[in-house]
Length: 537
Ligand SMILES: [Zn+2]
Image 1 (tube, rainbow, N blue to C red):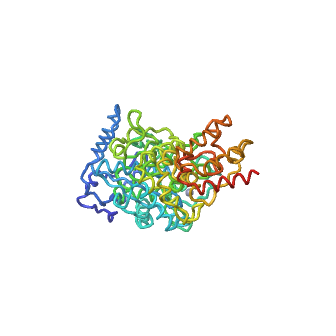
Image 2 (image 1 turned 180 degrees about the horizontal axis):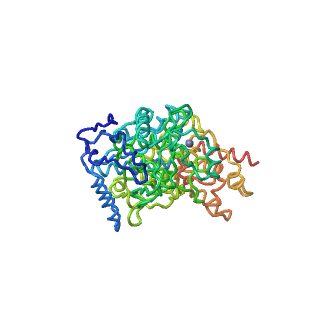
Image 3 (image 1 turned 90 degrees about the vertical axis):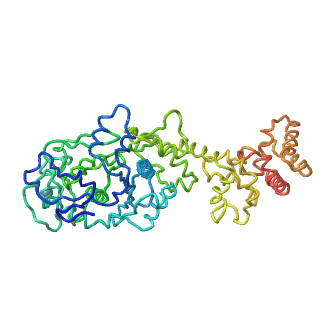
């Protein structure tokens, strides 16, 4: 991976653009020290990045892409680099999909790297949670290289820090924050470079800082944002290793990307402020920086950045509620990008074919749960009934159901499935839709009871009870009987059926009533009508 000092991985095409870049403003002696080869991993994919970039040209933006073409000539390698934090954020899911689609389109490779160096918050089951969430979205083990683990690259991180120190591009610092504030007179100015010239040796508690150039600018070539430009003078000498010697995210992230030959870094906008610092590290370590793409942040209906404390953001929660993976990934791909025309819900293959990273807009994207819900309803209605029945099973069977597990009747469910399919937007809603079929009695809902059991209810229920005892047990016949009973009292069908619906199903809304009664059966229906009358008297 990272070559020994001075050696280069022979035959690596990446070597062609490994160049030693010392931005203006660095001390003249900063050119010493070894270079790092950016890696020799997996460079056998055949499709050149140029093809990808041409495919991603936005109209009217050829000059920018032309420049990117000039420096990019190897196979596309992207990465998805989540931290195991206990849940899979929908923003992460969107980044995953953008990376994956780009790798797909280019015949390139996506690397999965678990950024597990924060040992305090790192559990094996959380790594499994990442893999499971990815698989749920349709990104399985054959779709990526890895998982690699950042912790396995610790020696590479140390080597990189040592090389930067040896090259005079990094130095030790023993300042504490209060001292820096006392010197600069501000909490906001950042580090003042105090230790640049002190030539401190390594020592307990001494951090390592990267020496940023004094002038010039760092231009981040970003496929989504154009050319964000950062004045080097405003980039403080940032920490790359903590006082205990451990590397910080900025450094580890770059070294891992270099070691695995990453050509395109597609990630959330939150990381944009890191990009100039990381680009300086790429250059200082002797490698061509990747092409960047910082995709827009996700915001809620108040235009606030999604927060896991305030908003629903865990993919696992949506999955548990009965969102379909196809609906979820369709929706996620449209956060920051749009299909042409008025199309929104389209087959996945169409999205893979049509997605253009360069057409992603940089402004914040509204993560609209109501719209996602509507998407999901569309996907549910588009399922074959048999698939719908299968998809509902996790909510219908097992110990978590409100009915006794043995009370579930698959024939009864199959009989109402098609009616239910058009009436729910997430699969968990199937439970209140059909629970009356499997519970011993109707579910208790006092509000529904109070609404439906008006003064006329007892006489309707009595008449229905009597008529239903002998009527042909078919939906049309049941409906005709109830219509007649209502008409005799000057009530339309809707009014007349309300107490019957609540008496039998417990709810004011649900499946078509008479089909429900037909499937529930005469005996249970009559028992529930009798019980309601008892309660009313
Ligand atoms: Zn210092």
